[in-house]
Image 1: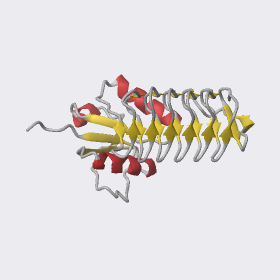
Image 2: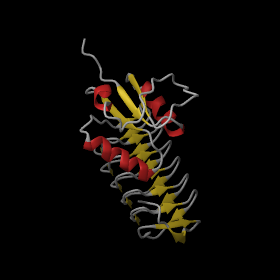
Image 3: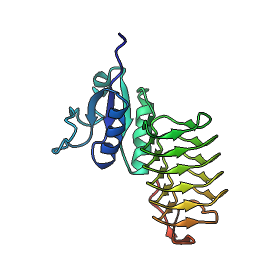
Image 4: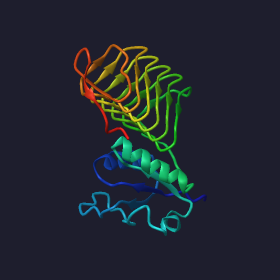
Length: 215
């Protein structure tokens, strides 16, 4: 019998719990987690291996898989780039309830949550979060390290740049483009393009300020 690779996590708090449920439902064995601090609550009874930047992290992982469980886009980008710099083995975690077209593409270190829909020819970058119940329609393009929040909907041919945060229940009409590091607030309805580094909210969505935190 071929031994299945274990999955090690970087980060172990709120978002990680959602990812862990999906990993366990997929039947993947867990190796433990890396983080700056030990999680005292430890609801999944995982072994703690300290900071992922420690010199011996490669010995701990030892050819197994590693996945970033970080909700913040900018921090997740740094973690994924660290993983790549060490040539650690990555995976995409796609919940077994997700409906993903065979013609869609999904990058490594990306999480696709429960009851999501990703339709034909959609292209999802690396280190992306497609959260619970989100709908990504045909031919959408989502840049690296972006986050599409629960129950959000992107109509066909929508483009999100890198490190975009698209809020809970927000909607983008067909053909819209949203620039790098921009934020769309919860429940917003986007009917026009959004430049990079801006925060938009409302129905219809309008700019309220710039965003200098995308990093």
